[in-house]
Amino acid sequence: MKKDTTRIAFIALSIIGFGYFSSCHKVNIDTQTTSDVNIYPYLQSKPDQFSEWAKIVDKSGYAGYLTAYGAYTLFSPTNDAVHTYLTDVNKASVNDFSVAEAKDIVTLHLIQDTLATNTFKDGKLPTVTMYGQYLVAGVTNINGVSSITINRQALITQGNIRTGNGYIHALDHVLKPASKSSAQLISENPNLSVFKQALVATGFYDTINTISTSTPKRWFTVLAETNQALADSGFTSYNALFAKLCTTGNPLNPLDSMHIYVAYHIIPDARYLADIASASSHFTLQPLEVLSSKLSGEDVLINDLDFNGVHEPGIKLDRATSDVSTTTGVLHTALGHFRPKVRVPFPVYWDVADFPEVRKLPAIFRRAGASLDFAYGTLKDFNWDNPVNVMTYSGDGPTSTSFPTYYGDHLTVPMGTTSRHHWIEFRTPLLVKGKYNIWICYRAAKGSGTLTSSTPTGGSNCPVQVSFDGIPTSRQFNFCIQRPLGTDGELLALGWKKYSDSSRIANSTAYQFMSGKFVGSVDVSTTDRHIVRFDVQPAAGTGNPSNFLDMIHFIPVDWPSQYLPRMGTNGAFVNF
Image 1 (spheres, rainbow, N blue to C red):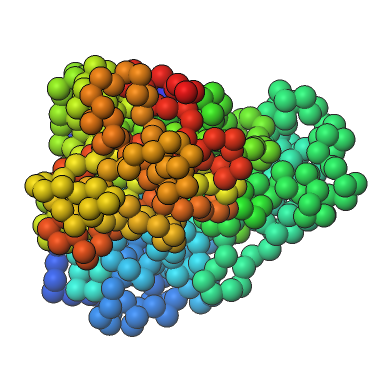
Image 2 (cartoon, rainbow, N blue to C red):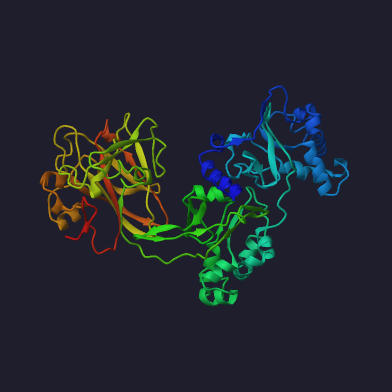
């Protein structure tokens, strides 16, 4: 268990970078630097350490290649490692390897890129080997000392040997390539027999069994469900699964639910656990259907979602039987049953001032008078252009008369064409695919003078172009312009709405400052989280330091009301 815990801690930390792991554990990496020679001459200069490996490199034909200048990383097994390997493959000496065998051995250990250990992440290394398979980095803990592992087969005993044309990392074992496809490994595992039958019936068995010859090589990540996971959901056999999911009678039909179910378990890329955990969503072979993912403590979870106010527990990927490299990609094991769900678009009233980083600060979050600047790079779901600028969270409190914001808090996002934010990106909550109207809800503010919809030239100026997944919306909005007066119908016709609950606001002027502006309709093509971006327009000039963003509303275009409910300073929704 200690080993598993250390490994998962590494997964979480490696999202930031492998080098940070050493701050928690002593990592067994001996570093040496030399700029005098290139990789192959260096191997020759250390016969007590690499003479056997140098012979294999020479026989492979890569000696001249690694003597010339370039940018390479070579994982070099020590003499003891080569001797152990010779015994394993029943060879008397390295001379017994054919040229082709030596070439395969060397190219599996060779990457055409310079990769120091502080660039490693748990999971695949960023560049594929010259053999055509990814190497996988990990960590193991032995007697309190953590060491980097490669492919779960070897430890790095000496890393970051800097030569004239790249890095050498010494290994205590020779690496062996994956020899079977994902389909073959699934076929050989009796615990995956039902899922295997589903793969065969839908034709995807051949997809994940065929080695790609294209350039770049095409990989697949398979999330296979165990027989037990299926049985726990009532499918004790393939026939039971077929009876429930095969809606057309032909699993090969792309419109059949069985076909969709299997396609939803295959990602068209090589993604290891850390890759899955570090991204919020992943496209699958089922068009426009994505898997969501997250790291929860020690667990990598699939489709752990908050949907329309209800938490849907995720499916755990089994660490012990996942991260398996194959000739066609990566194989993981899912401990639960999952498939795409038919969902109906519903309104998302997004409080942009409610995000994980501020929720962890109870002395700040939703506290009247509290304020905190968040620096560039510290917010997972927000991004902006200038590292000097910040995002400011402010707590207004539920009784504020001048800032009657939803739940009594807001973000301050100063924008302008000079030293302020030029653009800001926000990752949305989960949106069900469909067509939505987007409303930007903010407290209008200005510098000096008078700036309203009827007098747009007074005071500060901060026009903003909104885009959704890179596509500009049909209308802009201006942080400095307050909504006009009028009935709900009149305002709606003009592209405005009152979004605040007026019954809790004594200050009528402040109430008018609370402005909901329609910026356009968008087609959300996938049920996923998406990117909303604000770009300040050239007319802004220096812009405005007091842009107070409260909410963003995504309301289906055919929803009964675009302006109800109103949002209360106490978090209540009011339908009048």
